[in-house]
Amino acid sequence: MSRGSLKLILAIAVLPGRGSGTTGIANDCRADGSSVAAARLGADLAYDPLTKAAPTAVKHQSPQATTLNLWYVGLAVFAITVATHVRVPLLADMGRELGMGPAALGAYVAFFAMGRIVADVPAGRLTDSRPVRSMLAVGAVFASVGGLVAGIAPIALVAFAGSFVIGVGSAWTNTTGISAFAEAPRERRGVAMSGFAAALLVGQAIGPTLGGVAASLWDWRVALLAGAALAGVVAVILVWPRKAGTTIPTARLRDTNGAAVAPLVLVAIYLLPAVQFAIGAALIQTLVPIVGDGELGLTVGTIGAAIGVAGLLRLSAALVTGRISDNISRRWALFPGLVLQVASLITFAVFDSLAAWWVAIVLSALGSSAVNVGATVLADLSEGGPLGRRLGMFRLSGDVALFLAPLVTGVLYQVSGRGIALVPLIIFVLFVTALNWMVVPETLPRATG
Image (cartoon, rainbow, N blue to C red; front, side, top):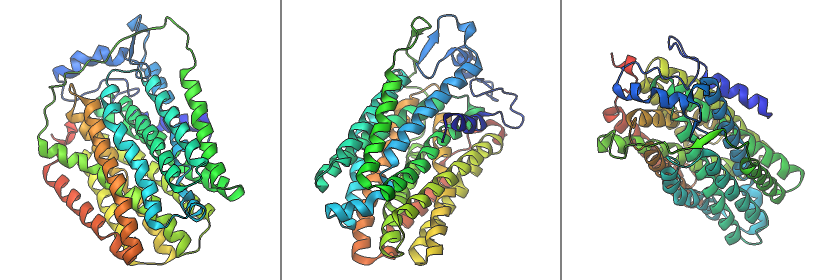
């Protein structure tokens, strides 16, 4: 996918919605007219999300310039995500060469999650004050080193170490990117977050597809090394010297004691990424390739293409729910996705045909946008408060599930088959859906009256 194509997708994500009266995500269009919005209007127009710097002459910082910088953030997130996701369809081939069964392959995915768990909180705290470019460069370096280690691994333990380092790079990149896009004003935040989703999900679609193609033409090691090379190139581009004297570095100050939120509401929102990441790790990244290879006899190329199609469907769903979130209701954008996730798990657990395999993938992809809406609501509730820190915790919750879900599911699948393997996850998703329905408020001003 070309740079111009991704810019087009991101442009669609940040175009103004119905009746918003905006020209881009850098405009402040808060409907509630609060003093926070008024006080931050000048800062939002002057703020450069790529460098976290204010221009020397504020009057020269246009909304279009700020949107352009978010395009660059999106391009970096896209490229690093491609590099960290070439590994997804390689599990079966890697397992055969390194002697890894289903439980060990689940552990490989879990080590990726462990790396993310380690990185989430420090990345979240640093992203409130550090330049986005340098934060993304750190993520790219970790992704490159991890891919290199996994690609040359002679034994499973070395592959586990590589997966861990790739996970650190993934978390560093994603927390940085989501924080940059979450700075949009409230009534444009839904479509802004879909812009971040565009970068992330296209990367998650292209990565497995390229990984499957490379493994089909050569082998799984070449696929991992190609991902490492891509991340290395991105790191070099990000640290390449820029023209000096155009900005003055400054921190984006936040009141870490502000924007109080009820603890139960935070718990409910923090569990939303746990749902999505658990399904992504246990179903899409573990059972889909294992069942596709072992029960359905599919090639690694076909499995990679199926996961790539799922990524593109997730992109479409994110763009649609972003519009619904900004123009109708946050809650109406949230709950249909959770219902589709439950349906995908039940379909995969109950039916064992190739058609059911595809249907489960499609339903899971279409329902995945619930996590984006959750991040939007969290940003709404954190205006003037510790947004980066809360987004770090938001992603930490998901990455704990990313670690636990493939371990539990891999063991249960090896012992009892796919039906029993998914029962704990189905119960968990139903619980989170009910909790969010009861306690999470509507945060779109015009939807609350």
